[in-house]
Image (cartoon, rainbow, N blue to C red; front, top):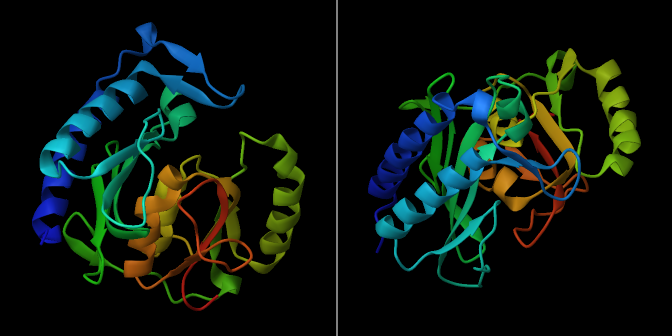
Length: 251
């Protein structure tokens, strides 16, 4: 039987160490590659952090599969453990030195997230949760806000890897804009989810995200008392891309 409390502490230490790679990046010599399209970028630092995470996580839980944004051969199964990792969520922010990026690590047992860590090295904020044990930031328990939509900050992602979705995004956003207090676009799905979890915002949506974007943040929001589904209200799948809607339990 795995002790998730001990494991989440070990994962947090590993992730914090990897955060130093982000903070100490040499921007003048940064190598940048294009993956699926002009907005889908990867740097040597994404790859370096993923390698460090894969090595460190395998030491912590050798039997677990490893699924990372920057490529891996493992696949999810109906049983057993699997890590789903985004080495730098908000790569474009990182490239631009925008100081709003995160490292995200989720542990799944079967098809359910049982532990999640999201770390923003710029603010030294470590968000984490284990199934049934609540959500925390730097050791302090967090919870979603109790504000209605009329007093809500709405966060959104623009699904930049598929620009055909932008018009629909704007239509949904326009509706929220006239009903909510204000809107924000940050460039990191993982941190948007954590913002909902700790009550800095009340709702986040995006028409297309990948499992490594939301796996850890999903558990953190749910353990903070929030709700996470697709835009249609269906359960999220970790098998591929999906829309996402995260909110407090009032909206």
